[in-house]
Image 1: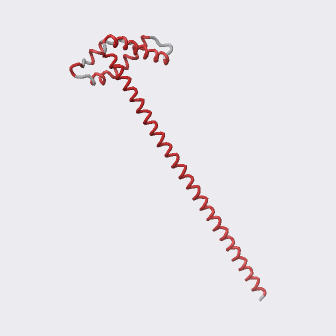
Image 2 (image 1 turned 45 degrees about the vertical axis):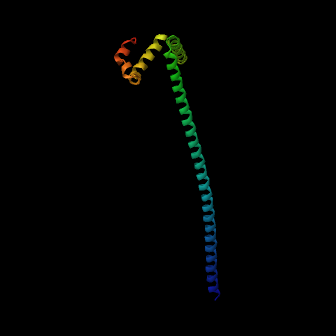
Length: 154
């Protein structure tokens, strides 16, 4: 019987070892599950915060863009109104052109008035059809008439 008692002791020790291992494994899995859940919650919170910031920035950018467009339209309306007065209009056109030239010159320090005029003429030919379409039919000249008065650049 003593031999059998040793075998029972080995079985009992094996069972104890298995229970301890399973207990340790269960504790490790539970703690890993809890840690993963906390990590997932933190990542979800971070993503939500970043999404809210991105949406807020997009709205702010849209407002800034709308304000810039409105400001540009108001400036164009004011220029048209001033130009509509013959004497004041001629002075204003000259002043507006000089301001635009000075801005261009700041970006192109080695540029000349002829180069500026050529660049303006090139840009004008790109948009002439759109501008003329905005005029009433009775006031609209043919695009070739307008383009024929522009100086040649080469």
